[in-house]
Length: 264
Image (cartoon, rainbow, N blue to C red; front, side, top):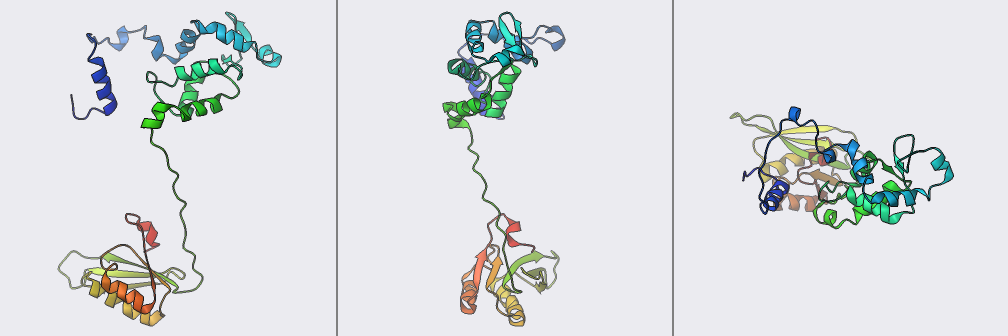
């Protein structure tokens, strides 16, 4: 078996090994009468042609006169103007069976919208269909095991600053890979005024980075907060000692989220 085979195909392959069969390919132009199950338009005829017809008739007896007056009868069943078979929401057993026919291991465990679309494509409709399908899918044991739960993302929070040089965003940039004395730039941006200070440096060692920030702090005053990424030039014992000595709060942005360091 190829290494690129998905886990689902691998399970199908293992399941089919218990049978003795021969696979024959039929070209599309020679297969004019395709399997009806692969044609959505035929699904309703297949489902209605079985013993469930009586259940559908019993369900339609519960429909209001207003609904039935807008339908035409076809082989004992009421068909509305959209060529749909209306059902009563009170027929709970029938509804559960219909939903199960469109949400199982054969046709797939789709979400509630996909399952509801399959049901409508089969020609069934009832007032609480989307709610019933959502409730069915929500408690489906297979979906509980294999479906990924979509955890809502936390809202993005903006940094609110009301005075200049209260919060500084600091980051480093590489400006040259050649053998030049100064290959890096430490960029400092004020969160309120967006004033930019650029300090060229020859390396990103902790001593160089901390020394480069001191003239800016002396020129503009000490900020309340300095916001950096988690680079080793800003997160080390020397930088921590500098922040503690100056009584400046040091905030670190989340890894792999460069937008968290503002406009730097």
